[in-house]
Image (cartoon, rainbow, N blue to C red; front, top):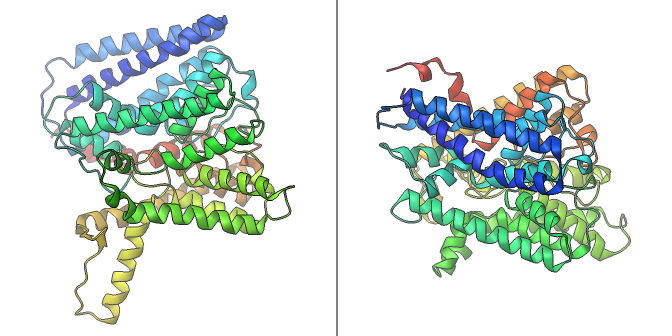
Length: 482
């Protein structure tokens, strides 16, 4: 294990976090929020000390960097980012409990949007901005930002880190250099975020609200700055948010293909077609099931499309309390929580690409049982899928199911209903935010014990990092020097 290289890497990650804390500090200074200013200043001081310490102990780090180091660095860096990033909440006393503050920032960085804050409108502007910005930074990935704009040295550095942090069954190159690929993805991400802000401003949304809402939409996170999430905004603003939530759930590689005019590749992409097919089908079924709940058909369509887009992209914004919908509609939303968005997007969940691979693999196995001599290859968009990718997908599903049941078992110690506990696990592990019953869109996670909050925080990290970077931290062989 290359510990010195890891130390230098963590120092770089903390430096980036410190730089991104500065705008939140400036906002608090401008608004005269003394306690928030104190929280940001002390956090910056802690980051400075840690960066200096890690810089000293990591001098002369060897350049070799392999897959194991990549996985460990990703898991460790997200834990360190969260442990330090929650300090402004805690030091400012806006979230008095460190465990609660840790849960809140983990929910931010992992783009989950599950909150323990009973009234977000009581938070200071600087804290609200940092809370929303954590979604944006975690959406595309802070490590991807590091690779895109600062680069990295060491054998395999770029590929191993990008593969470990990026969501989906596999990571491919848009261009020959992975660093350039990361830069392209982030540029597309930034441009789409700016467009989102512009469209929100055209609907007369205040600038601060527009920026925070766009940051949460881009990262598919869902931290609102109002207690009712998006319910009090105009239909136009809700519709704009619906469109952008769905757009940010598409694989970002598709936008690059559109830019270089490879329209056919995007139109014929199986994952994209399945993604929009599921969205359309879910909207139509829920509209049929919730007919009569709202005054007009337009209102029914608007709220249904918003909630379907919010749940399948794992954003978590809400315009209505969907926990009051009929059981059939809530069941559809629970299924969408598991399915998630496209691989290579900022959305969470199992991912459409992985679901397609699992279904195709199951179909192949059934055909082999009927005809053992039959040779059949699993294909994706016409190309044969590597058997290792299928093995990794099956391994992911196994770990996915086991973790859900273990986390569900642990948090059941708090004594809440089965529906509350199961939806809490689904919405944290799949990085969604609101669940059902006691963790529904009008409630929060503050009633859980500290143990449950820490376990759910781990589930959020595992879900965002595709499980294995978090599991490998518990392997004894990981920490051996050779």
